[in-house]
Amino acid sequence: MKTLIAPVCGETYIDDKKVKRALKKIPAPDVLSNLADSFKVLGDTTRLKILMALAEEELCVCDLSALIRVSVSAISHQLRLLRNLRFVKYRKEGKMVYYSLSDEHIKTLIDVAVTHEME
Image (cartoon, rainbow, N blue to C red):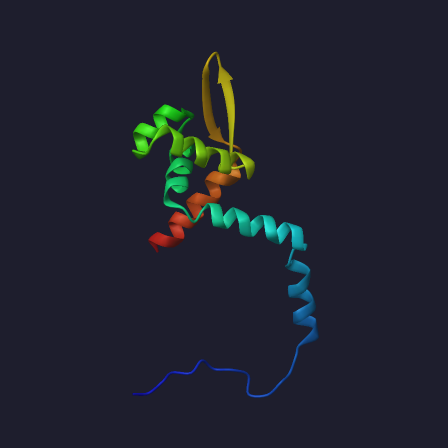
């Protein structure tokens, strides 16, 4: 059985200009850490469902629980994580609390990921 080996550089040569240009595009360590945390949050199907539902309209915890078919407690826990990373925001109306996406960037991020997956 043949083993395929990934191609590597035939000789060591570092293009300093390319490396410097690429390095300028890499954010500071704290930004990278926050970005990695954001992608971890998006790695959960329940949280993705919540975000996709909220991309359509503002919903309360009970609405999300019925829609996603998980307990109110589980939805609340996921919403807390999403709030901490600023994916969602909330507003109170009397005793009711309604959730929505924090901004249009979240919807764009999800739309791009879905489009990528469908291609």
